[in-house]
Length: 288
Image 1 (spheres, rainbow, N blue to C red):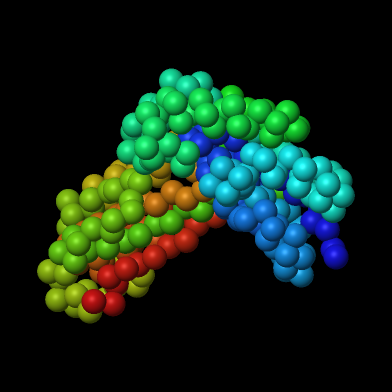
Image 2: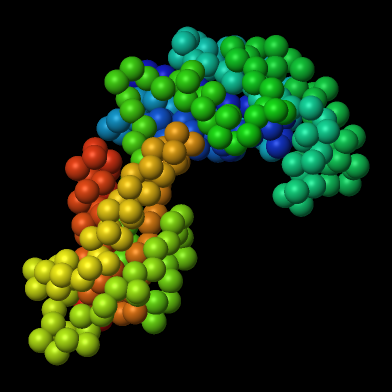
């Protein structure tokens, strides 16, 4: 059986942030699985070994598996470490108060305590997982971590040489009369610019055509607006990247999504790409 080059097992207390660690490893190129039954780990590793670029594997296991606390220590020592001797076991911890607050905020039941007070369920899980925690190569107490700080900590420890996490900037141009895209991080309304729709010979054109670009560039407010827009977005994008966002979506809207927003969005995307960012440009309504 071919072994993965890197195997990270993620476990710990319920509510301690395991899903965030998993998603971060995925951003780092790891092939991950959550809540995999222990007996399926070896077949899973056998399967992914045949996949291209799946030599980095992350697996989340915890008390959702029946008798996990009793079974896992011997399973890890006798089977996982013999299969992948350089495997890393991460145990995530947090204070009782922080865990209780997180369960209160999410309104989800504790896996050990559907009929128990939340603090009693947390304490029971903590006691059960003592032997599992003792096996860990890395114990992270997430009590004082924000989501971004936890992601940064994992990236610092597990980002491989030569592997860089990139943020994809998606620019969506659209018409307000057809509704706004639902997943925008930034929104700019360019309906204040003169509308080529009311120039008869320009109406059939789109914002990708030279005639529309020339028309907008002739408007005195256009160039000043665009320079300020580019400067503002160029300032914001690295701030979002510093916060470890994998995707940033920028919406640029006009009335119909055919002329003004398309010209501005296309130019902005090309300028950001020239700055070295990964950019995708989507003209949602240009053919309507």
